[in-house]
Length: 217
Image (cartoon, rainbow, N blue to C red):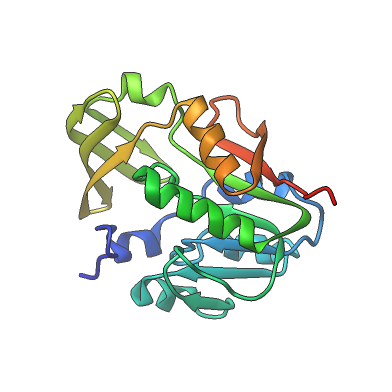
């Protein structure tokens, strides 16, 4: 079984339904807007967006993930330091990739800024801030996937846990650590990349937009 460098089970993500993410992105950008997704995985979000008429492009560091994104324009590369030499109306950083160590988070945002067109928008998915105070062992199901969260350990800045994904009689396991981001940290991280917070797209603050800061000459 293939896993990404951060431990995500590739086979599971290839089977995961598109969910609500494509609708969130589509609703926040103009019709036909070009979209770059950083950490696009198997194309779960990009494929529906392409079907909705958006020119899309994906970047992921896992060749195994991109093998499932056949038919979509992609580049196999790390997000950090990436420079495709072009810009897009919208840059998407989904899958809660923002909730990583602060240094890497700033590198991710710098790459977003480098690829967003003037007047464009960066769309970011994060763990809702309130989630860090309530997350614990759980067993839930949505869209035909059962999620079992166990071995949860919390402190003031991080959550460590194991999640089991169940589809039918198949099970995949992922151990992860995620980092809390308070509003002041987020503002500073955005500012470091010449981005500014714009608005929340969902009531739980799981999705927000940021805009490029335009230099005044």
